Length: 246
Figure: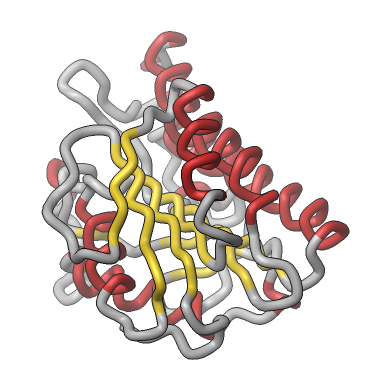
């Protein structure tokens, strides 16, 4: 997909490139004629990508690996887009809570480590690389269930809280980034319910037509990023461009 609202020969960073949405973001953005290079940051083995994709191994829980990744990217010039497509909802040993009574401190810390602290470290090291004097976007995948205003069901305490904390982090980054780079935009993005490993055990109640393929979700997210303007910085948007209250 071509980027029309960014500078020619854009440099793009996708963190979480071995995941379903992340891999699709890499594929679609690297196929655009106006994209110079895509840096695919991955935890496990990255898929085969186009020749203009540079894969870089990293770990969200290792700040040194994030710093090293940023240093490698910086050698190729300023960055136009960073998308953090990482996240955790469940593992074999970790399931979202049905009530507050199920909270486990170790499990909660793990969820915050991946969903909040990891993206914070990525922001720390990649926001200084954003291009000056032209539109640039730092976006992280959040979730509608992280909206405090939208919480009507309870449950999923750790996941909800980690995404709410991520939203606050991004709002803070947006305020600080505007002082340094007035053309830079920082946003939270809700990708919808996507047919990936993250959502697989929880797809039964998804309305017909609302379970997106990774390809569809990635395409919609890129469209939202294309439409962003400076005044959108610090806000939270869904896959269809609609604003979500924090």
